[in-house]
Length: 436
Ligand code: UD1
Ligand code: MG
Image (tube, rainbow, N blue to C red; front, side, top):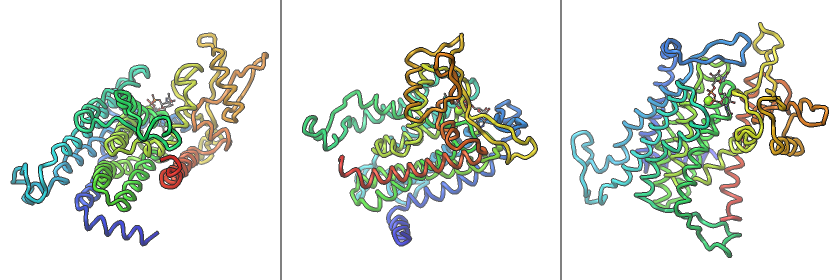
């Protein structure tokens, strides 16, 4: 294991200097974020960019939207990095020489590669802008659900004009009927938009306890980095190396700034990340999955988010009442001893006169109950569910563990995320040969 890591490091420093630069920039970006966040706490509070830490007995007000400075530090890092992969075309003179359209030993300048990086940055930047608008204006879900699709347009336009690849490889079992490839045509763009919408919102709805948004993002980004390194090291094919290098250029600085944010958002949180961070994180990850051509592997790293989304559907699509906040609630044992403050699952009350739950909603809840995925608190005289847990992974974990402190819940969910990433690697590198 250690030998493999040593080999990978040696191989990268020998053949991929841009990656070394990216790694150094990632460390600098992370350190800048660590220094910047504490200085911005008061200005953010003054600007009323703040939120109540609902799960603490004394309900402190914390600065929110610290995802914004993080995203800005990341974008500046990426701006500075843009020339690095193309340094050979500057004849080594970097600052002073113009781009050579034809470098004798390198061929034509890869304008499409530059376009790829610029379109990715533009999509991420647009997402940050819309995420910030959401944090400031608290936009309603029916509108904000489309925000990632709007921010993703530059990316899709670039994809259309440069790749135009709209097929997916058919699983072996389906090949007798559909052939080796299925051409999706315009549906491929719908598939990519859905991926962008899913990545951004799925992080935002697995939220509400200290450290969970940044923590899950960190596990996903580290999983992507490990996958890229394995690919580059194991696969000498030029095209694969290129796309996974592209992914690393975006993921390394992203991981640096996320780590810094997690440091301040970890229990007991000093700042909140805000929707800006969730959108920024989801878009950055979706961008590398799409332009890195590994959307299926990417989805494998989102298993807990996928579960949380599917589990949430009855509430998200309003078959069952959906309160503004679905995060767990505090069960106060001792106000003076923070470690004795335990969380238990938050409850949704059905049969409300204003929003009665229909037959379909009830059927969904009964189905979840049969699967052991619902904590029924009470039933009415007719035996119908009248109170149950809010349909989130956090509440489900609590219904199995019983009341636990907030930091233990964060650690438990992050452990689930890590185990799911290991499962994803197993599927990607072992089980996949039975399907592709
Ligand atoms: C999403 C969830 C909502 C959840 C909320 C928590 C859906 C449909 N929406 O809404 O159920 O309650 O995220 O972020 O699933 N907060 C804390 N502690 C934390 C993090 C957040 O108390 O560690 C509170 C703060 O008051 C903060 C607020 O949550 O101001 C942020 O909520 P916001 O991000 O605006 O909620 P949504 O993303 O709309
Ligand atoms: Mg949010």
